[in-house]
Amino acid sequence: MVLSLEIMPLEPKAPEPAAPKTIVVRYGYLKLIGEFPSGVTTKVGCGSKLVLRTLRGTEIGEMLTTVCGNGGCNKSITRDKMLEYIRNSGGRSFPFSDSGRVLRVATAQDMAVQKRLDDTRSDYLSKARELVARHKVAMKIVEVEQLLGQERIIFYFISEHRVDFRMLVRDMAHEFHARIELTQVGARDEARLVADYEKCGQHCCCKQFLKVLTPISMRSAKIQKGTLDPAKISGRCGRLMCCLRYEDQTYEDLRKRLPNRNTRVRTEKGEAWVLEGQILTQLVMLQFDDGERTAVPMEEILAFNLPKPKFPNGRTMQTAFDTMPEEPRTPGQEKGPPAGHAARRANAAGTAEKPGGPVRPPSAAAAASQAGVPPQQRTRPGPNNPVGANPADRSAGPTRTAGQPGQNRQLAHFAPPNQAIQPVRRDLVKPIPPAPMPPDDQRSQPEIPPTPAPKNPGSAVSSNQPASDQTPASNAPDLPESKQ
Image (tube, rainbow, N blue to C red):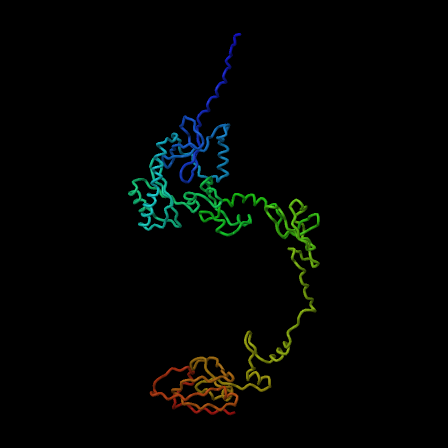
């Protein structure tokens, strides 16, 4: 029996996909992203090292994915999805660039050169910091990056203020024999350059995948009911941790579903006040009108923002803890004037009181007019009427002129009761013995020491007394003593 073997036809081999026209790569210490046209004809996979030509120079990058027209393979995305991802990840702030080109796949020699440059990083850092200290520039060198083509050396620094480093750059270029570029970064970018692991045990988010480092506010920590201890919610950079904003949008959406505080809602048990709400559990603490408090899930609340009850006087309650206000007093219940008020008004009826001042006793002229005594005629002092010639003036007390003798000004009567006599200098006037005073006034009246006569009687001495009192001693008449 002859056996014949039939050869099975082989399936045709699938054609290899064409080389991608553009490749999405990641390059630099700051993990920049770019989409560059590719001149590579061989098949490359994700994570492959490529030699790139960028705006900074020739450097080594890492392939992320390819941009296919249909996105059929599992390692590529369409251009629309990539643009949507960039728009959602920061938009214009996303570090994306399309000014570059993929030259070739990195060889072992390229990797060795790059490793040799990275090994000299510590020496470059120490020399750069010495130059900064020599020039006394207020900056701190954080990191140094050397490109594969050695077109330039990039130094990253942090500084609180704007500094002038022109002289520093000149000396650094002379020291390293290369083009120097100084780039100022913030505290978060510093952590992206030098940090490694965080408290959670994972790589720092800013160094692993975050490209846009937006500021984080304390409001996110308060809404998430987390601890407010700065040591526990701060990252390696000293700022609030970036992971606080991962769930911030979720917490905000859940919080909007909860009713506001001090509002009225309706449940199966009746109407109640809203005291507090829990965001994650979606529970609402309610207080009913009978004082009972209970936690109710959002699904059991039937109506929201019900009208608030009112008091019998028409006032609307604002919270569950409002009480009935006190009734206003009727006109008959109003308090009258304080005791003794009418008596004080009666006692002060005949006194002259100035607005805002103390009550003074009535003057002698006012008392005389009330008693029916006609007022005495007074004459102004002059050449023919010396001071003290009018008996009314002598009885009323001493007078003082408002200005120099001879001027027509109003006389100011000065007769304060029981006021101490101030000592004056009587250089040109004979000393006058003090008039006897009542016993009550003698206790309060101080003694006036006798003033010695001046050595030179002819010398003119200034005095505070009026011009009428400053008369020569030879012409000063003896004034009569006051009668008790």
